[in-house]
Image 1 (cartoon, rainbow, N blue to C red):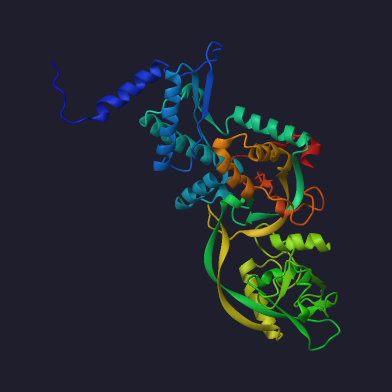
Image 2 (image 1 turned 45 degrees about the vertical axis):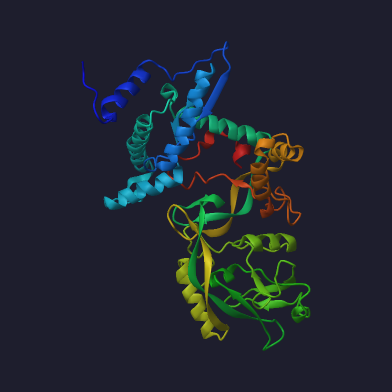
Length: 441
């Protein structure tokens, strides 16, 4: 008789037992009309690395539930898979190539995609092996990767159907733009990091009144190249006489109006706010209310595209040159140190640039109605608090009255941004031939 070991050695038991489960198809589910179906879709882990404790906890809870349902007699399916995590994986592969002395541009798109698939083979396999080690009772015969042909075709089909139903549309809106990854990113991918900066106070001359100026303060002086107005609060008595007058925009040959808008806090700073509709979400809404021009001053790589002395400069290089020129012309009033939160891309840590771009958006108003109605009628009492939290913070009624379909929309609607697949090299280019010409243009 074999002597029982004093300590438990998982290596002698767990791999052998798990393989027995796999060989016996104990986790496999089939369509069985004699049983009630029960399905859990595993939130697919990103192939950016390996699993952590959060994954272990999450998958353990799912495993407990799916095993319990099997014992209750359900035809229980736990659908496993992994996620390509496009931007995050692209950043990881770029970092890996840099360590090897390789630039992705030298590889070209096809060469870079081969490197991405190599990454997927390594880390996707590692993740699945980790899930095996956890004893996850998923149906591995059905394992999926989000870039599998079936998954990709399904995404494309749903995209076209939503477009045909009018839920997806293309419009010019303020989005978060990453100049390094050169793609739009969602609010969830923006980290606000505290940085030491400055408030540059600048004088804008009042046209026709020599010696009179309007003083504004900005943390991004380079964006003045895209200013199309200066706003004051309509109740601010200090500036009522200049509303409607024109200002000479420094360092340019343009004149811009002084407008009155309640967005301006008359108690903050000088009470005058430069309005740059194409590069600030609040200014974008002000611009819509006053029909202001949207001047995009930056290329996708954050170099200046405005003709003149700053053309082609990086945004920070242009900032230094503009500040120096303002000082030389006697229009720089003062520079005040200022610590503030700056939006950065959570993957590559680049400072994000708010920018107006043509993007695909999803109208959420109609699709949100069932959830809102369930909240109002208490149809889901168990989840009422969660619904209240998500709906109250994730959906807002239009603040300006501008519909998403007119003039590019209203940022108060918080639309979902469809990632710019044309700019990112992974997972692949948007398969545009499969879409109708109307859907794409």
